[in-house]
Length: 361
Ligand code: NAP
Image 1 (tube, rainbow, N blue to C red):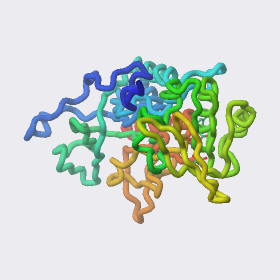
Image 2: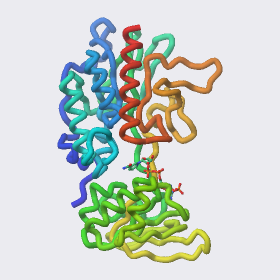
Image 3: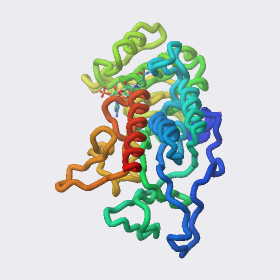
Image 4: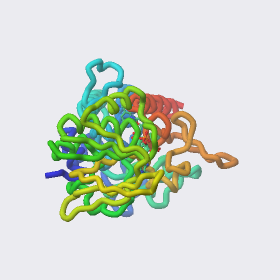
């Protein structure tokens, strides 16, 4: 059976989704409690436990900040869905995404990082340091979670991004176990010896196609243009693979089947002719959306939802500029350009160093 997304990511890492809180995170304050009786604010809260969040946690924990890492609904982030990482420095033979993440988490924990399973719904801060909803005038930032409010002196937002969907008829009907997936690594094995489709023309699509070609009978790569966006090495591997065929200028228009997916209808961009491609599964690899919706009131986002800023510092286009003192951005939620594990890790490191500087003054 195909697992739900949450359990799948958790299982991939060997963690459980709903762990009890660890460490000395502040308990939920009782209604009407005074600020004095409430627990201390965290020095640093890191929202997100992907490559960026965990790298920030390693650096911050090592600097003695005892960071609290909020794991969210996808512990470990997108790397947990990557089969084989060949380009993370230090692993000449490559390493699986889940293993890399497990190692990073262990490394952060051994220096004193703490982890909490929670979904942050809102971030609040103000120059006047007033937090009517939190009732904590003495701390800088308030994070409202689904189950509790947390307070912090500094915050790193490293919430990552979510795979994009096509938005065509049939997609929702067959998504999650009935033939449509955004994770070839997670669900590919269910389609052994079957004919499958990968949609997209980037590195993810190529990586998925190569992975699926190991055990599927045929892989059709459906791409909307006449050229792959993927890196040269990946594109060459895909083109050379005898089990992969590329359908150029092809736009998915509909997914059909009864209980399970049976075919993908595609339209030829140039001729507008349509054809039906029989397949047991369609894997979507068409990019991602930053997970920044909970922060859109608090932080400046660009038109695609990425957090605006320079490096790990957040800045808006407003004149005079607003202050985001003590709040930093890292990883895929802030970077629409590179989106690599190593660049996310580097941003996490920088964000932790900046948080430390801002605490020390
Ligand atoms: P991407 O580079 O943004 O590619 C997305 C692909 O999906 C593009 O080919 C795009 O077409 C296509 N697409 C987007 N929306 C579509 C739609 N509505 N219908 C049909 N096709 C659509 O995303 P990615 O492949 O996930 O890669 C993201 C970043 O991660 C990149 O920087 C990549 O290099 C990196 N990455 C690296 C590795 C690795 O090195 N092992 C693996 C995976 C990802 P167009 O080309 O026409 O825009």
